[in-house]
Amino acid sequence: MIKFSWEWESAPGVRLPEHKATWARIEIHAGGNLVTLVEDLDSGSSRRSIYAPLYPLAEWLAFNWWKLLYNSRLSRPELVSRFERTRLTDPEFLRNNFRRIGDGFAWPDLAIVPSGSQTTISWRPYSSPVANWKVRYLGQGEVVVSSADLQTELARIINSVISRLDECGLVATELHKEWAAVTGADAAEVEYCIAAARLGLDPYSEAHEFEDEIINSSQALASNMFDDFIDAVSPDRIHESLGWISRASATVDSITAPRSSRTAELRAGLTKCRTVATYRPWQMGWEQARIARQIAQVADTEPFALNDYVSAQELVSPEPRIQALGRQSGGGAALVIGSQQASSRTKNFLVGRALWHSVVDGDAPFLVTGAYTEKQKTERAFAAELLAPAAGIAALLDEDPWAASLESVERIADHFDVSAVLVQHQIDNQLAAV
Image (cartoon, rainbow, N blue to C red):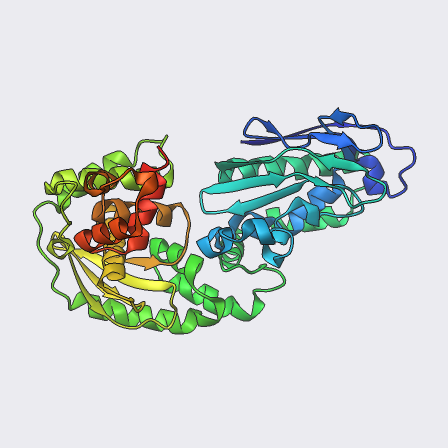
């Protein structure tokens, strides 16, 4: 949870009316940590709060509302891997960082990275470059919070600032106008704004040229497919990707899926596991995979026979991140693979992810994509644990996990018919981390 608290303060030397009215002593807490712990560089003393007007913060939140909350593309692994190097240089990361607020005040280096129903909040120490604000932020940390709770808290800040402005007779600011546009949007406008943000676009300034494609895709696809589609597709490939989905849907209907008597049992077992609220997405995937192996009666050291559950054909997709389309049918799953696979091992991982969808999504058609919300984190963890269980890897290793040699990793990858990268990730994330 992230929590903002403040006390209004007098500001006799401040000229701008919006700043003068909203001058405050501000504290920010995230996951029990104090983000606003600073050192005064003149006195050398530390304090728990900063002094600044809340108006610039509220205005920045309102003008960036949709992308701050819904641009989950920032959570993609290739971006996360370079987050520390580029958090203040990459335009998209910087756009979601409090240091972008500016207005001549020393805001914390706090970044917001949404990924669906959860959002990562991270902050780092730094010395303010603003000449009049000689402070150094001391804290560092990262927490994952509910996106809904974050939205509620940010809206509380904006509404409180507007109420303060109204009390001071400032009733026609840019903040008033922008927040009225956000809160006054009808259901269709909200859906469009969220979709644009999930495409990585500002709905008011960047999405106009793609408006027809966004609307067409929302009308053409069922809600579960639309959500995954819009999180993955490049804006300039929406039209041709919709065409691929149409062709793939016709192809998948022609595929004879395997008939497994265990599909209903798998669905019941995995659905029950999803009700455990304390699981993180990847923990959910690992546990669901263990349940699936138990139901299928496959030992931890034995390969999992995906062909007993999924039949697949290939049809190249114009969008690499739209990787497959499938559906559950007659106790098995039919799958059209759109992304070119480097080997049978990477294909197995993709099919393992599709198996998760075919069980969890029920009878609805589904997409397997390169998005990285909590759903994809769960399905990736499920596929990894299903194909190469951590317990099985541990049993097959000849050395301690932290000392596993490349030869051992490759030997185990050969045994499970998965990539060596997958086995190494399992070792790093589940065995060496214990």
